[in-house]
Length: 116
Length: 115
Image (cartoon, chains in turn purple, red):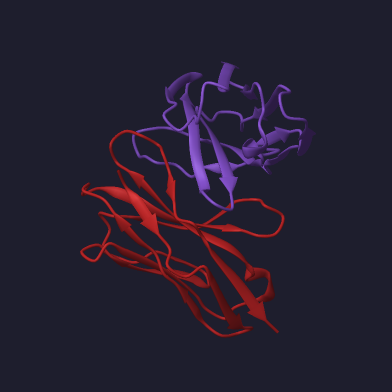
């Protein structure tokens, strides 16, 4: 398996622009997570999905952030409009669910976002 | 809310020596899971070891082992025979048994391995 795939790997954009980050989870995994990593706040869970349904979005910082999972093999995290404080590394992770929880979360390589 | 604390922002160890990274957590749950993840300079997050709270035996994976003290809410990682490839950020993480798959991470410990 190719693992969790994220695109782009690097994104540089200007303040006010819309940014879309993409994630393809591992086939067969029914949980998908979006994390943000910064020096100040460390790794934070933004939102996670189970079977394409958002379960907990309490970590989404503001209404400027939105996430979708239209099908089992694709998810997006959108920031509109972007601000310099959104600069961070954004990780997507996926895992299998089941009665013996939790399964290991497999992380993608991350997207380094820079907002100028 | 659960919290995870890693009190050592940085640690260093000589190659072939042993190092222990500390982690404490706060929870009111009785069943949960604990993890150590490694993040090398490539940024890739890699699971190192996991521990189920209901298991008294400490988990071991090759050169990596944990010291799980449930009453003290402590979960330290021991790396034996340290290798240059062990240099990375190490994150301790907690996951509750409440049906949620959420991971709560500590701030991390940067490990340097000196040749």
